[in-house]
Amino acid sequence: MGRSLFRFVDALELCTAYIFCFFLNLLFDYVKTLDLGPYILKAFFKNFMDYQTLIIFLFTFIVIVFHYQMLHRKKTEVYCRILVGDTILNITIRYSLDCLMILGFVYLLSILINVYLNFNLTSNLYLVFIFITYILISARQVRKYENF
Amino acid sequence: MKIFKFFITKIFLRKAILSISIILLLFMANYTTFIATRSILSTFQGYQEIKCMNQEGIYIANLDPDSDVDIDAIGENGTQIVYDYLNNNFNYAFYIDGFMVSLPNIDDMEISLSYMNEEYYELNQFELSQGTDLDFDYQFDKDKEIPILIGKGLSKTYPVGSTIKIEDPVLEQPITLIVQGVLKQNAYHSNFYDLNLKKYYNFSIFLPVNAEFIKNANIDLQLMNGLMDIVILQTTKEKTVDLSEVMQDNLGLKFNFFSQEENFDYFNEYYLYSLKIMSITTLILLVIITCLSIWNALVSIRLMLRDFTINLLVGLSYSKLRKIFYSYFGILFFINLIVIFSITAYNRYECWLRKDATLATYGFFGLIGMDWFALLVVFLSDIIIGKIIVENMLRKIKKIPISLGVLQ
Image 1: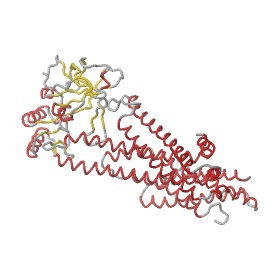
Image 2: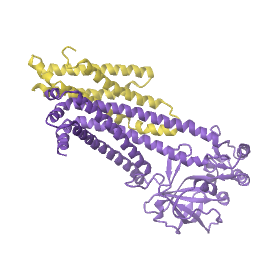
Image 3: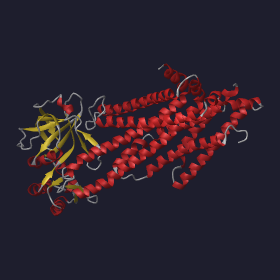
Image 4: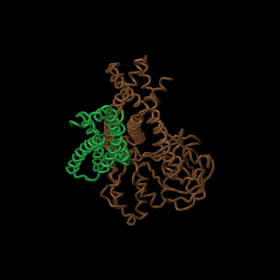
């Protein structure tokens, strides 16, 4: 992580945010497979199951918050790096690759759990697309800090 | 007020993403609390309603799950023998509903007919807003008027004393009804096996059923619904075993009769267990969402620290800052409460749009008692969550020296 914008704590924070969203999706899929027994429980969980995608999508907002605050905090660092010879393109690429690496690691972890639990492997693929979109949008934001 | 306006427009809204994400998190906390409270309250109401059945000597019929129902094989003779046996040996509470008829009314709703006998009526003690109680000692004759109770939704079109002519679906002939009373607004009946599921009687007609009425009714009333949930009163286990045998011999169906104690065990096993699961799930979700909200709030502090500390430097006190934070979160909670209120009001209104006679309810802004109670619980939970978040934010700000904050 020598030249990366990420420190260990940042990577851990983003990793936790991704894990939380994937875990939530997994939890929904798991509850679907359960025989909930009494109708009252089914009716209660149906209030959440019916809006699974929407609820998870809303929770992915924590990842947006992470990207937003991370880049805000690093704007001085970005500017300083450019001063000492780095380019905004390289910084953006490194930042995107770091995010993608963390996302890939968490997705791989979720695939392993899905295989272990015998769940559909594509059930959380949409989350990957959502997070890649967030990464691309936030990568564009890095350019904003070219001039301090 | 001026400083609060300044904080909202120049600090909080300048980083709108943080405000939006905290609104979303708090909305999910509120939605979870609202749904859980309403489900628990609805189950509790159902439990209170069914409690009148949990008395000594009361046995409730239940078709054995392994018993196959073949309507064609059951003759009217068979059901009549069963009813004769019931009339001669038992006191029983009889209730069925779900028969829909078209009847002109100002809300253009289909009307649900509910048939019940005197014992069921006395057991449930329905409250009336107008008129008098049902009279079950009428002489059944197609030229005579049958006294009925109606729901509030029908009372404008059919006031007490007015007559209604309908083609009765179970008698399969036209009958004349006379309105004897109006049920209280939002009178309901909980499903016997799903206590949180309710049918509202606002667009229902209560038809009193006596032995003569049953004799003239078709098999739908006699068997399909009437016997399925029949409640035998002041009896013993031995007598219900005999009744079960009579039913098996004449209808070919095996019925089980459950006592007060068995029903109580059933309620404990299923409903208390369900309520526990619901409460625990809600609590876990609330803890997770509160933790995420605290994280979000601390992120806000991290990004807005300079603004806060500059204001503290020029004379803003911590107690004033606390007030600003509480007011800010008060506004966020208020927005969420308005959203939940609007969703609930729309859901209630949707039943009217769908012309769903059994779910249409009356209430202030369309919300009924349990909705308002759930909103109150949401409001109380907001106070707790708000306090936790604001105190954590202040602790974080106090930890950082003002000079360091300004330099950031």
